[in-house]
Length: 114
Image (tube, rainbow, N blue to C red; front, side, top):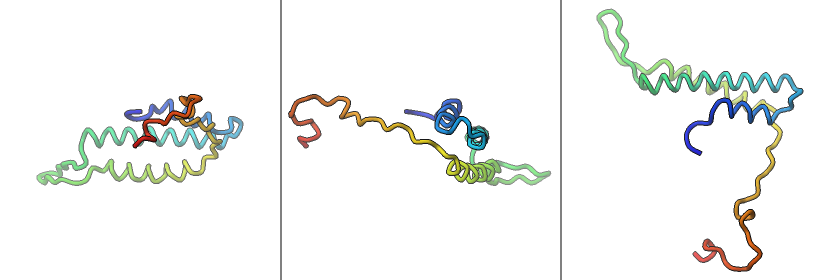
């Protein structure tokens, strides 16, 4: 999978993994998604403006760290404990791909030869 996961897909999966009758858990997921959206907007701003920005104050001009970095760090720090507090149900375990493609013979696999 390449790139970022769509927020709508993330929300759908998270809501599918919590008890649909537990309003507190649903609220946590909604809050998580809201913070995730804010983080993505900050990341876009940082990508656009850069990590360092030039500030002009009257006749002075100086370079400083982008203030969005500080906000991004704050949001990330709140996101982690929130994620850990959500009571997820486990996903069904997928079969390993080699089990899905196995045949009823005793021939060695290519990986067994090296």
